Image 1 (cartoon, rainbow, N blue to C red):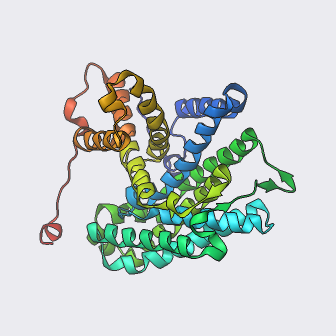
Image 2 (image 1 turned 60 degrees about the vertical axis):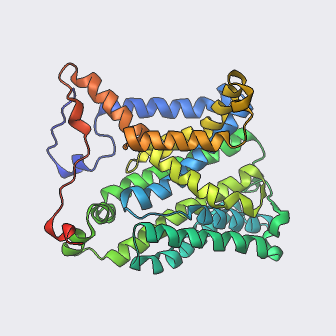
Length: 358
């Protein structure tokens, strides 16, 4: 097992903890760079969707996993970014400027949602964000002069500095660069005082407030940053599909995003991308398994929803830390064998007197 002795604050905030992480992340980077040359176009498209959903998952992970705020309307932020990107791109705006406006508008909408949500938390916050998602979806359907309504809206191919990006490899490169920048931004944010304030609010709002953390400010900031990342993902999502309709951003999309962060592993950056890979791979696995199942099961309507629900229940009951938590347990077992203790990752929480009185 590797022991790391930190002797300076600079070493504590370093992104890579040791040389092994540099090696494996570098290997992953090389594999992602080589993907357009090694993968068929179909699998490259699936990998592109993993990156897009990973960016959206990073936003929801920042809100739910690191700040502890529950959201059931995150698809609305995704839709705001997608429609903003589509409208501005069709109007002739440059791709980077349109994406920046999509992120900014989604962040403003996040602030609008975050301010009333300061008075509620838990399931009541979830209901408030769910209602907001319904309102935005209905707005997309009714505002026909801008969004095209239920008839949908076509999206032009992106152009970067006058060069049209109409190939799968070129668009994959844009998504890869955006995902890397978003990941580095979140990783650095969590090491900054702002990120530590988010985590303090998640652990205990009373303790965070007693240490001088402004709950209203940081909760609103978390909503804004989370919505901005969802807006960026929505902008890429619009160009990938090249067609938008309001039913693409309904409650089912919000549940998919929530499923992504829970199964991937709440409170971890890796969990956002592991959950995105699960979300994209699961429909493919279900389609392949239908040939091996009896017709009464394989052809039954709603099979995918049943499988999703079963997987979610299994993770909540047997692996609350998600896929990334399972990997940490496997890695620790391999490093400490035969001295690994089974209850090492058992969830523990100590309640203060002020918490018990609530």
